[in-house]
Image 1 (cartoon, rainbow, N blue to C red):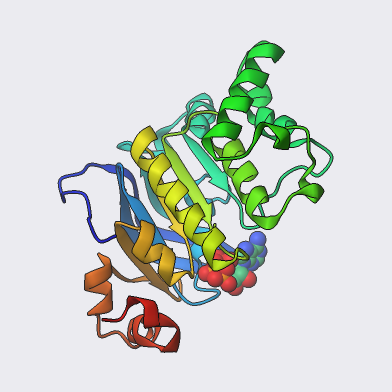
Image 2 (cartoon, rainbow, N blue to C red; image 1 turned 30 degrees about the horizontal axis):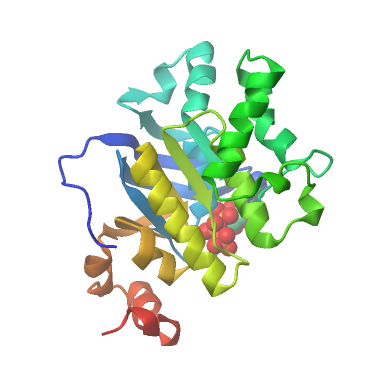
Length: 259
Ligand SMILES: Nc1ncnc2c1ncn2[C@@H]1O[C@H](COP(=O)(O)OP(=O)(O)OP(=O)(O)O)[C@@H](O)[C@H]1O
């Protein structure tokens, strides 16, 4: 989209000198960037460069060894356990395969975070879940179906409805259009943009999808080997001279963006 919010948009989250590893393997090392309030930020990079790990660290799902992550100006490290629990309601995560519970209906899946975090009557919980179902463009008839009965696109929407269950301020999306046909992917991008605008959501989207970058993302952060390669608008990234970015944005699969 290349209509980045003004540079003055305050950071919803910042990542500073981040280091994440598993055992004796370091995946992220010295990574810094910011996620600005209200923007849709695309996180790109080669396979294995650490995009998902970065997203999971920002969502508090994997610990970091060094560096600092802040949310709305507050460092994670200074939060009490209770504050961290409360803050977890401020973000929703859409995992790569949707990660819906297969034994629960779509409606029960959407209700699940509310059960965990909120003290609501079953009736109210169900009503809110129906609203979320509608919000992501699923018909009421989808409520009582089970994940195995849904198409890939419907699973993504149901998982998105669950990610929105607690009215988060920040949405983490891990390859949201992977596995969707181009029309379904385009519609999903549109949905993300609409939701971001209407609900004032800040979005971090891990993606390999060039069309999503153009259709949905205000800015892009590129990783390489667990470090920041470059951050900027689509125009800036397309003009970049780093070999991986040149191949990515001007290779044979980039025809839709050329011209
Ligand atoms: N829980 C874990 N334990 C050990 N290694 C892990 C773990 N999670 C991720 N890794 C490793 O971290 C590296 C980065 O993985 P990550 O999934 O973040 O890459 P990615 O950039 O998202 O890749 P892709 O585009 O293929 O999804 C990989 O080498 C992966 O094997």
